Image (cartoon, rainbow, N blue to C red; front, side, top):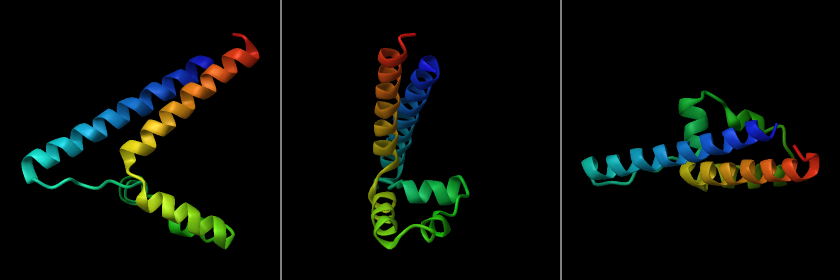
Length: 98
């Protein structure tokens, strides 16, 4: 489990760096910074319809989740996901001792 969580953390941080490279190259060639939010990526690239998933949540959670998905850049989300995976790996190593 520890190795899997570490690998997911590394994959998330590699995704973050690749996203920033893509955005940097886009900026170099088009002179505009492309905004890749979590909502854009989930709907356009992954084909997940998050709006239908958000409808099943209570209204206060749906509003908060929508705000986070619309305003959070993909690179920041991937960085925090990587940090969470590494923290989970550390906690599992301390708790389970393997």
